[in-house]
Length: 120
Image 1 (spheres, rainbow, N blue to C red):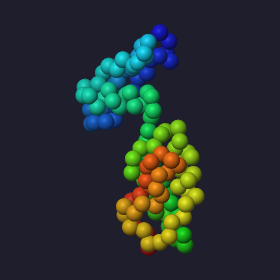
Image 2: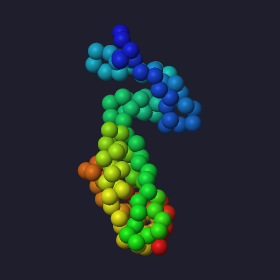
Image 3: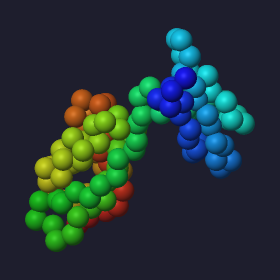
Image 4: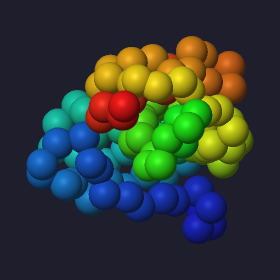
């Protein structure tokens, strides 16, 4: 078995931080090292379709300071740069309150971009 069929990672789904080993078999991955069921689902997600919550700054129209934003759900890791560019290209109107949805369905991912702080 070659190195491309073996992966090692640290699980971040709970505070334990288990070292997970994954070996690709004929049809699927064999996951070992996880101490809870969340570790297996984390490893499979990372191996097949990794996703991340995206945090960024967005410059509202006429504002002197940017407002911090994040996606309300993870977006595909392979599309992070595309999603970040879209966020940087949008300039919402003031005022903005925490939790305001500033972009619906970011780049077709289904994730919403929400403000994490107020801007006036």
